[in-house]
View 1 (tube, helix red, strand yellow):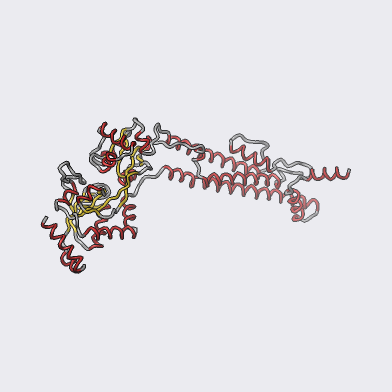
View 2: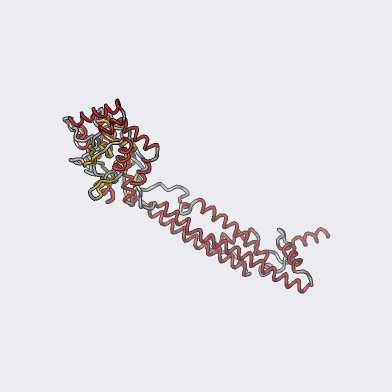
Length: 463
């Protein structure tokens, strides 16, 4: 206590005499912490993690030296019936440490015993479960989920463009429509649309193209349809397999209303105190269930391990559960977060450092340093299911769309080549220019109405 009194006197003089006196008179601060991934972890003889990075940044801003040790009893800090504190809170209260830098939740009971800074991280209470015991309610259009909206739009565009190309080739190719004046055209736009639909359903719809150009387009469209259907059914089976769960748990209300999944939280934690002191009927049922079943765990690692084994839901701090999800890909955190609270740094009650630490934390937050450290230590190696599905949609489908575009282009060019070849032959027979004959052929073939129909109409008018 004498050392703490001297420290308080030094920091009081700091406020009166300025920072130069602080630099001359400061001494090494004793910081207590606890091992918890990723806040504080061992790296050889040193400690690393989010809290160590935070402590380093605060020391740079406020200009103090420090020495870190792990809390002796391995506890965060809980008050017993006689009013004594254990863990890191107890060390700060007894003067064994000047600061406690760890994921310590800001609570009213702790605020009465020690000083707590502005929160450096916001958290809440959520649920950790295995993915295979959580299901989502399928919507009416769940059958569209294998492909994204952009992919469906691309398929629709490809369908219409292919039908138009079939119609154009059916008109241009003389092998497909040899006598425009007397023969009706088989590949009207309506029939081309129906023909393309038949290929998509793997049923076919005659008549089929006879010209090489038309067959090139047909074969390319059939290949596109086969690959498209293969990707669709593969993705659909995967999504149904991952979502076929016997139980639906979206939040605490669902957890309280079922008896199939066991659940619990960390013994003696602030999370347990939240449910114990809550007036919400669902939260009270959860607390009574945990007390009746004694389904508590002694550590965060034990709770994560039980959740991994299945048939157990671990209730804990959302940021800690996010870390577990990042480390263990078979786990998932429920979207609902309740009881929002923050993690703070602990100082002795009435410490002059409290204000400066709070200001420094706010400055780090405004500069984006806290967000950067969160991203650094909570990095995940897991690939979400949606990312896997999107990679299939984005990368696999690009190639087949390209193949279809090339096939359509080749088909249309071949039809023009066939028409040009016939026009050259006709021009030689009729002693006309090839360009003149080609222009006449194009004019006849690209008219929206049949020539024979026009001729019949003309004859009727004459009669």
